[in-house]
Image 1 (cartoon, rainbow, N blue to C red):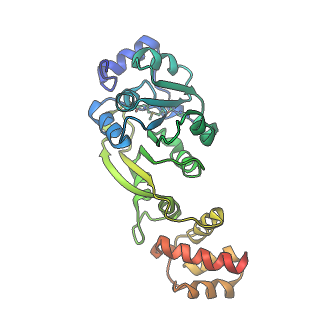
Image 2 (image 1 turned 30 degrees about the horizontal axis):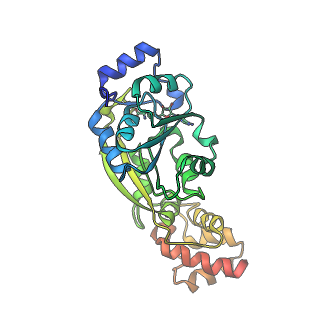
Image 3 (image 1 turned 135 degrees about the horizontal axis):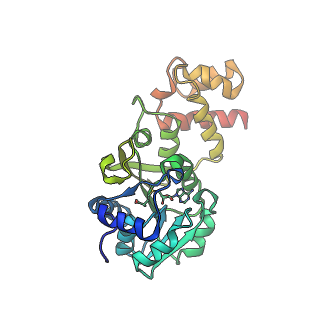
Length: 285
Ligand code: SAM
């Protein structure tokens, strides 16, 4: 590998050389600590054969380490100033840059385009924080198989993904994510390792797809979960009756799966929501 990009000196040097000063509108905060990007790359990639998709390579701080660890890296970047920087500064032939807004990319199509037969697909990113949730949901909804996603995000958002029943941060996002993935924290990251330094701390989270559940109508399940959390201070019965639009039926269905109508959604496990989906879908479908 050439000299590490993730240092204050090298970052400033590249910014001056190409006149690529950070744009707040693209959520640009570059990592300036090589130890951090190396740890993300180590957690993200388990074998050189894995196809790695990176979201938002910036000037290449993490990209460099991903290219070191994998034989094939595809990076999506929205900022048209950056591909030339990456091409000149990274110097790996197996890096492919796609200048596109990740929210407009057809993920399934890209996986089909780049994946070799039998190859595992992983995603890695120091995410643009202003679109953390839409990006992740786009990946969770992909039909093509993804093995794992390892991403840096704002600490508070990470805590919601990690939360379980009865935790303060537990919400519909936690339930829907855990329906698809095992979620674990890789590490906490201080705001001081970014340039410019944001006013929040960060966390690296890893999502591993577990394929445990296969509900017939997943969108119906996701809508049911969101409805149960719609008003946090209300009981599950109050929220759920708005979903089924029938008070007596709402009570009957909750009791059928042993959920006390006076509890709150925050107290229910993923399995509770799955049982509630099953009886509701059966009675209304
Ligand atoms: N990976 C670099 C690093 O760790 O130093 C940069 C991370 S920076 C937090 C986020 C990156 O995402 C920026 O390069 C930004 O231009 C890019 N980005 C922002 N919105 C994007 C989008 N919609 N699609 C693709 N890339 C995007």
